[in-house]
Length: 402
Ligand SMILES: NC(=O)c1ccc[n+]([C@@H]2O[C@H](COP(=O)([O-])OP(=O)(O)OC[C@H]3O[C@@H](n4cnc5c(N)ncnc54)[C@H](OP(=O)(O)O)[C@@H]3O)[C@@H](O)[C@H]2O)c1
Image 1 (cartoon, rainbow, N blue to C red):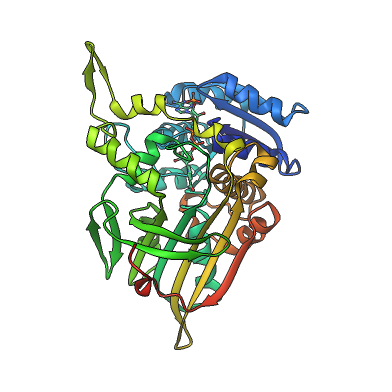
Image 2 (cartoon, rainbow, N blue to C red; image 1 turned 90 degrees about the horizontal axis):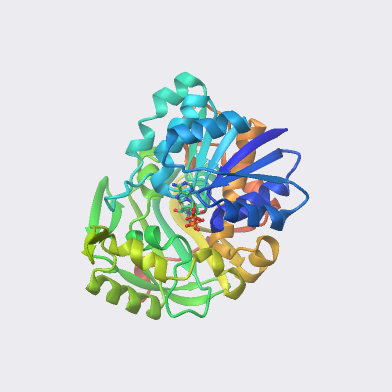
């Protein structure tokens, strides 16, 4: 019987609240707090039966969080606000002696850069306090890390190469919209690409490298090499991996709009003077774009996210493909959210559940691939993200260039 505090009432927060409410044996009391109280209240009303209590909080303010945590007295905090809030929430958890979980690594608000360093630095303090921080318990990062840990446990003695493939083939009918927070999404995809090879990081221009891949349940799509945060922790925790790359699909309309946004400087996070007042162009752009949380009812189609892993077992080299297919409308019917929020929120709930059950409880700061993948994989099946695990002969380098 455990009380949890969810911080952030966007698309992902909605799914986490719904999914926690489906498992009352573990999540006996659920609090949802965010900057805008009405959003929390709307989600609580959707779930009904008085299962979710709400509160307003500015999660940039550690003291406000500490006061709220003391009032609610949760066993853990599930952080599904924005990456900017990771450190203030980790500080509040440290001060109150409460476990922490998130789905995206820290990013300073005024610098388009994300890395684990800032959060890994909490490891000693979390260990000394006997509390746990679980980092990146979404889909990618999150399930992708667990797929790799599972492949290493069950199929390989040594992993040689990893390709993570993220395809969202959903259609929301807008010429341009992002499926999660526009600011974070645009910062991620307009950055230089980067991949890991033989112990070094190799940088590419944005969208410089692409391939066409035939995604199961979706069909052929263009995918582009981008940098993604799970590669940083995997490079640290999986010794001997020779190469790691991350690929994401983008439609033509999305890329055309992105090019114009970049050409106009609307992706900039440097303040500009507008009629005498400083504004950040990317924050202004966000106010013009559809709210990702509103895309649910109008998004049709599927997502497919997975890992192609090559390695050896008892001297034999082979390749496996582990992936999940989710359907936007099916996710919406269950949780009032589209599949990108759903595939992030379900793993966040599962990570929290395993921590509360004591199956994943360790003091310190942990990434997903460091923990036993088996209970997590079982819960993915049980709570709405069934997965495929098959031997294959896919070689990304032989695929057509887009
Ligand atoms: N690992 C993965 O697979 C994955 C995939 C997608 C997203 N994510 C991560 O999931 C998180 C949530 O994404 P989302 O799509 O749900 O974003 P979103 O729809 O923009 O929701 C973010 C929520 O956080 C709240 N918030 C922002 N700043 C706050 C503050 N200072 N204090 C309190 N609340 C604050 C927002 O409040 P307002 O409503 O007032 O703005 C909003 O309710 C992000 O960190 C994102 O990077 C991870």
